[in-house]
Length: 246
Image (cartoon, rainbow, N blue to C red):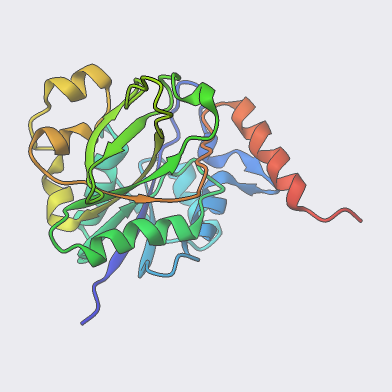
């Protein structure tokens, strides 16, 4: 029997830099609708649900006929919100899709999902993209990842890794889309938080510090989240570039 694969889009209204960004209008639709409509184009997702704690987002999701699940308001992370939504579902694989990336590529979702379908021993998977802009290598807001020969993550950092001593090292940015096996996700918040996660402020390090593998797949998808009104303006310009001129 084929495995059920659930895509969960966590969305909250509160945001320190851009309150209500999930409902901000982009090309005539709220951002969360763009995310949902791109997710349902992914080949391997059986279902897609929006997980929120806000009545306004719930109402918006219902207006474009998206499945929506109300969750507790006290979650400290999107991962915890996704886990609550997953706990009410029987899907064996859960995909955590950021609710502020209206340009999410369905093929990127498929690539990360395939990582778990093809590797029965991996509890978790994510994505990486080759860094083309040298300025991103030393930008602490761009998370870098290094992987072993088998494709598993060795470390994630806000620092420049690996250190380049003139060998023209290749650097990879981490793309924050996660795929989990259900049981692993439901237990994730109970794993001890280690010093590396505390230092880097990167939640995915919790898995590595507790001895779990993270499979990392390469993608060409360039993540572009909407965290500020300026980000929304940049994404709007990209949308306009794709609209044919009369």
